[in-house]
Image (cartoon, rainbow, N blue to C red; front, side, top):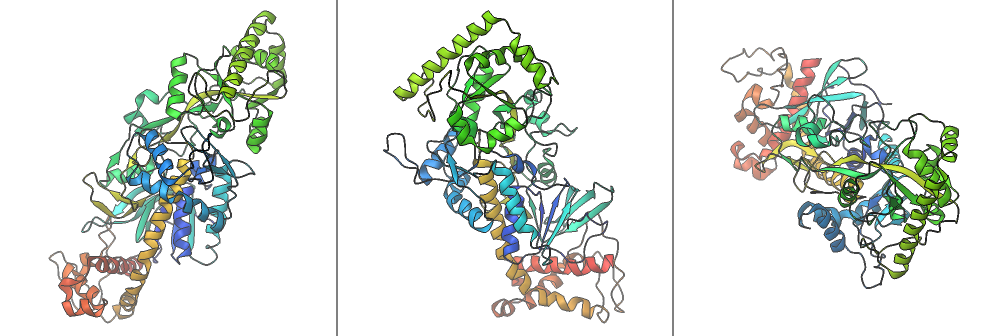
Length: 602
């Protein structure tokens, strides 16, 4: 059972504290738990999943079975990296190269380890091939996060996992003598009680800031021109992890690169709502076309998102129509059912009804019932409706001719499920607007997920994955690459930290005797010029804020290195304490901190 944090930290320090329970956090957790780690998974919301739950179109992986329209080329790692780099306006190496190269293994792991159904494949905007995988049962985000959480929660009963929901992280706490991140101070949102969780390593998987309307808003700071746009993000997307990391010196990159998604649904029940339901890019991937209010097309629907948005803004229209025919809707499957059930799309019996519906929308008001909307559509001017119907029919005729020719005036070459017949029911339509969707910028990270300062140095003990990081997607993220980013770099961080656990546990024997010998020891001398009698251990002083809690703080760097070296292999013992590896010393410090902190809270 998920439990809120207590006001005092546990005496047992977990291997990892993961902040955020979306795809990145869950992937990191599962990789660690499978390796035998002890993990604390914390989220400020009382429900898991974050924005990952909202993802709809799919997750990308290069798909060697996908061929170009003329059959002359097949998808590859290189092709995927090139598409991503072209959209990002970056080189296809570095983080982009890692993303593309790791994509196949990432979705295979999701399918095998978490039993995620990714049987459907489609081609999204900006992709040269069909490589975006999704479930047959519905939107990918809910399916993926549910499956991952199901597997992660199995470790609660084994004592490896502590799930802390409704706990809002407030500050990353560092050791003053090393700068290493030692844990997080937080507030339990149910009780307003403050707490602290120590961990050997801390992972940020806290997402972006595309709904940051706070008084420390990163959105207002870096893109004040976009604040007026509605968003698809939940109220939790306020950049908390970025702010905490930057407060202790983390670097940042691409903070002004904020993605506007071209298709967010207008809800007829609340047209002015600041949060919109995402109309998944997959809806254009199956063949959906975009119309202006005058019935004309204006863009290649399969361009990258930033280019579709640019065409929308240049059109001068404030909203648009997404139109699908029955074969497109059949391929979209559960997505269409979901949108129809939420009254975000309507079923129409041809372009005659479509024209009346579009005209009625132009004069619509918030909160209308379906019956009121239908009555208003029936009452529109007949001549105006006939003129708009004629325009729509001409638009579809041109589209169908272009599909036969293989290219249209906007450069579109993929016309899935064309032709669109004006009088072959049903047609499916929804009202859409551009919406804030994703922040490409974030904190700097290395290829292994380590959080970096602007000078490239590592902040020890701090790691990150997912939208909280920057540098992967550059100027513009391709649809389907967000969940992939979370899975790839969440796995990289999880596997990296899992590999360190055996070394840490090898030093555990050294610390096991610390408590047993405590009563008969000569006492720990606080190395700040003060001395203490050799009559036993001192009473544990209150932990400072931030806690000066490393072993070297209490007994001195030299003694810490000597003690750590005694637990080292023979070659290190022969070399003497001055040659004790820093990594082992850090393990020793952390382990001693556990004992000291236990003494403090006992």
